[in-house]
Amino acid sequence: MRIYVDCDPGIDDALALAYLTARPEVELVGVGSVFGNNDAATTTGNALRLLELYGRPEVPVARGAGRGLAQPARSAKAVHGENGLGEVELPEPAAAPTDHSAAELLVRGARSTPGEIDVLALGPLTNLALALSIEPELPDLLGRVVIMGGAVRAPGNITPWAEANVAADPEAAEAVLGAGFDATLVALDVTMRTVATDTWLDGLAGIGGRRAETTAEFLRFYTDWYTRVFGVRQCAMHDPLAAAVLLTPELATATEEVPVRVELQGAHTRGQTIADLRPNRDTADLRPPVTLVRDVDGEAFFKRMADALR
Ligand code: BDR
Ligand code: CA
Image (cartoon, rainbow, N blue to C red; front, side, top):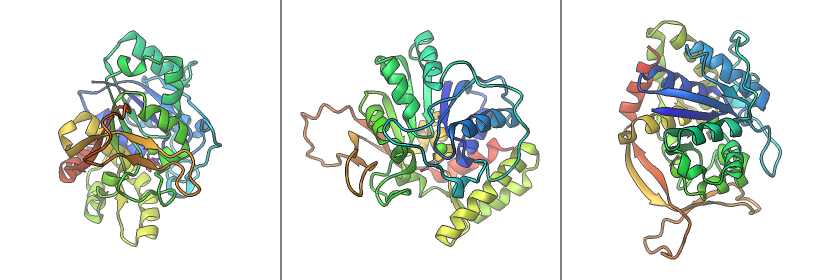
């Protein structure tokens, strides 16, 4: 599988990269960075550092957007640390980002190998929206696009209604979800129910090796935040779950095809993802549906995630 990752590392983004780089069937064709969990300079440096940590320094990294299409950037340092990786210091990367922007790198790949590249989007969707404006035929030039983002039936995490990746750039998410990609949404509906438990987290200590040990260090900071907020030692695995669904679609044990829109106004609801869930929804609605994941095989996922760190 040829995969392009767009991400804002970010601790769970790091876990997604750990997952992908462990799987022999994956050919990582590029990584785009975007603002989100931190500023774009930091997420770009982190993408380079992580690819070196996980043994894939040759994968091209392109720096992406530094802010939303219609709003400035925020960051999530309380969750991911000042440096985006739970204050774990990795060596300065030997490689540098490409000369192209993330949107350009994606468009170039899509044009050169039409239909062959699948995209995993783990941050604000700004780079994908910019890529669409460069190449309106992008949906026909890519394979699947699996997106970690949104909250359809679940509460939001950044506001009562909105999930962080979508809320960081609602205009971009609205453009991407309406563009006709073969898109799958791995939203908080499933990621907040697929949490790493105490036992699973403790099990990482027994794996050994730099890959697992460093990832476990990232997770310590992240889990501390979840523990403070939820009162239980656990953490959500948003981005690696999306990676796993891209590689193994059967992990999504229940899905539905629905049109999803993003609220762009709203005094309290900007960034909300609204799916038309009515059985009698308007058949004249030309909005292309996306695949919304409703349930996953969490046990199989956590086994695979641990295997990826071995
Ligand atoms: C998403 O927001 C980011 O903080 C995480 O990396 C994940 O992609 C969860 O809402
Ligand atoms: Ca992310």
